Image 1 (cartoon, rainbow, N blue to C red):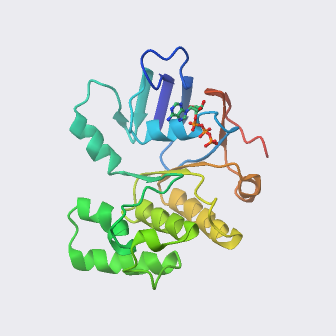
Image 2 (cartoon, rainbow, N blue to C red; image 1 turned 90 degrees about the horizontal axis):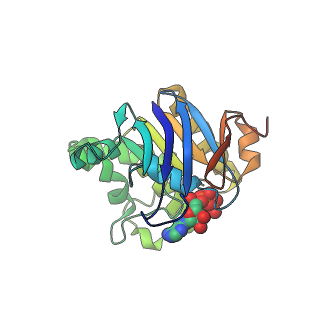
Length: 226
Ligand SMILES: Nc1ncnc2c1ncn2[C@@H]1O[C@H](COP(=O)(O)OP(=O)(O)OP(=O)(O)O)[C@@H](O)[C@H]1O
């Protein structure tokens, strides 16, 4: 569950205007929301806030049932982030590590047994079409392959919240559709999913409620494409 009550966020305390202004909305556990809006509207900033990379400057925010404010211990946020799968626009893979070792990171943070990790990795690599890329260093991958590695890493530990920032922009159409079907399935299985995109065709393919941002304000909670 996600709940924001009049949340604002400034990049720096002295900034004259907030990047996100007085956002109020809720998403129930298992809910799916598109996150739409023009370039610079604040979509990536909102996803970073929901990923608890930064704290609200004002207002009240609850992520996966956990209040996120400066009264909580830092360790609380580290644990909370481990329950979130984030797909960044720039992938943020760990250079110097193989595809498999990148994808294994969330499971190793959970101290899962290595034989279990091996099986999970094999299954997900096959699913994202990277079955033969197990040992390939991530810096040798194409953009689409890097994006699929980032997607696999974000979902392998079955997080309660999945945040995706333009997760299909490096993918071919058929792969993008497959990814979308998987997000719908994960949400039906109980994960909350929020996907920022400019891809209107994708939104039409999966009609779900949308959060529409404009210049840091939430201007609509309905799908403008439905
Ligand atoms: N590193 C930064 N330093 C200063 N301002 C930034 C930085 N990153 C983003 N901004 C500003 O924050 C605002 C929101 O940007 P954000 O990236 O969240 O928008 P967005 O909706 O995700 O855009 P896009 O669709 O182009 O990815 C914009 O005005 C942008 O110029």
